[in-house]
Length: 359
Image (cartoon, rainbow, N blue to C red; front, side, top):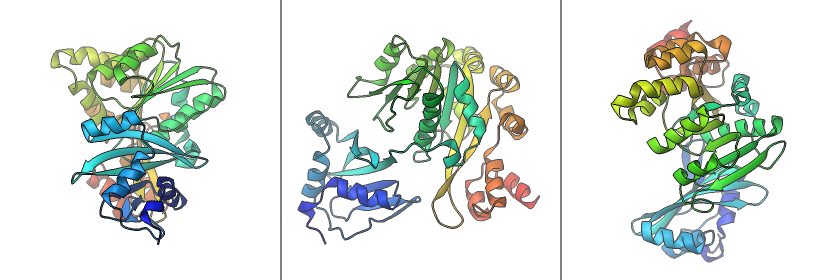
């Protein structure tokens, strides 16, 4: 067993990376842990119990002086660092029981394709749009960042344009291919999302990636950019296309609802709501996605505020590349990739999925 004082934080990340862990977790009074396929497990190898000083030393080694001061003032902060040749690590440092702790998300350097992710090729059509808003939604840890990285990489390979990303923190590193990419990290390259969004339209962008839609201000600027000749990608923490639109509309005052629905109907290109579902063989997880493509019929339903119609339109919209979450789950069950029991636990409408599986 290693002496705790000799451990480097990159040793812990490397051990997790080698067994495809999604996160490495450290706190005082415990051995390092990892999340692998949604379960917390022991990090492989012989690791000692870490003291509060050990955790502070490990985390301080990847924090700048400004970041240390920020943590001292706020008891939490986000940062990112690189494990050369392997991955980028998105880290949330926080205080628990009066000591430092952290959860470190492992983001492999290799950008995976839509085919690698098991996502339908219809999503690649979104990247051909010259303007509008495309949203990838789902709970934390469902692979939104990976899907967005794949879409941005398609544009990078196929178009000669300027892509600007605004992230907190910067997660996936993109390198210029046919496109020219500027990646701005909140807290390092810009003070906050709003000033960065206000400035971005003066940076001659063609494509804009906003790490997260956090408030009405960010949403408003994103919609504005989508309306004025830019293709905008972002994320929302919602579990379905209906919930996404409902939340966006309810973020604004009631008297703005009609106008907002009209703006969304003109700007929205697609909503991809995804979940990571455990495979039947226990060997990892698979992405299952609900996909809403904004055809003229869908846009009209959004303009009228009839969000309840969207589920039926997705159900019947296979020709356009649309599908409901239940359709995606049923397809994987019939292919033997996920179990029926697992599918039902992730279903949007359980009774409907049961009927689909019986058929």
